[in-house]
Image (tube, rainbow, N blue to C red):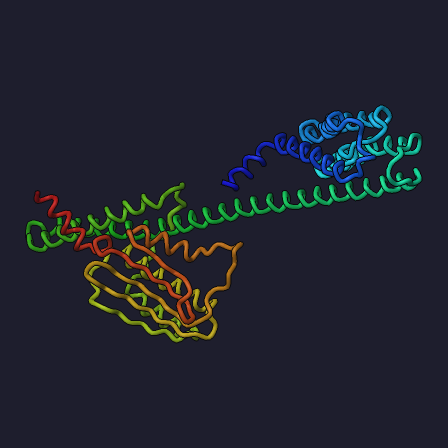
Length: 407
């Protein structure tokens, strides 16, 4: 409830300034009551009215600051009429000096200070007031100068701090926008890279289908069994190609870059060679497979290879002296890829985008899986990816499609 009221007051500065002016009047009443009775004004209600009039410019200090300055200077004629100066008058001059210095430019703040305080100094020299303490006009003028300087420089300090905070906020906003743009660019780059690789996989399948179709046509009459086997392979390959085409379309969010030259893409068979290369580079790696590997779409095999490749590359770059373990787990319902190391992990870099992790997440998400990457309990770094088998197994997907067709 309190936070809501504070927010409402911040959104309505005129209300705050009006309450501030009322507070100055109440402060004047307290000062009057603390003064010996022989120095009280002849009529306290009239004195309270004049005090409110002197405090009124404070209510206008942010809505119409120059009007408030002019109204404050106009109240300097009251001491001549009343024979005394309300306390709110001097307090109003201090508040307006601070306000102009804190919210306006340096030139405007200096002009406001001169307009406010030069008439005060002249009035104190020409027509000094008699009060409880008998002091010389020079002392009063010196006191006014000190009050002016303190109010002015406090206001300028607040002005400089606000400007500095505004600059920092703008820098933070620009940095956040740049970070977001870099993240989006990293995702787009990885999507294009994945699309190029899937393009190679699809093109390879289409080439195989063309070769098999040609062979089936040639042996159809003299060897029907061989032709039937070739047609079955074409059927299975076409289903795989269709799935890869769908995934290719999913990752294409921008105009595709020119397709790379068709080259064989690494898969599960290449992981052992990759592990051996990393060992030769100086990182001890243990590779183990749990379960029985089943048939996988080529795009899935490529995804597994890229995850292991990226994780081991990061280990070589950032882990320092360490060991690593690569584990593939083939279950009934899911396929797990896990890479653990005992190193220190990558150093924090908030201004840099981790393209490798972005690419791994995009690849895993393409097949409906999840990816977790981060420090391990007790030290080291862990990359864990889990893919549902119904998304990655050609046999499972093909069986489902055949059931649908038989219906």
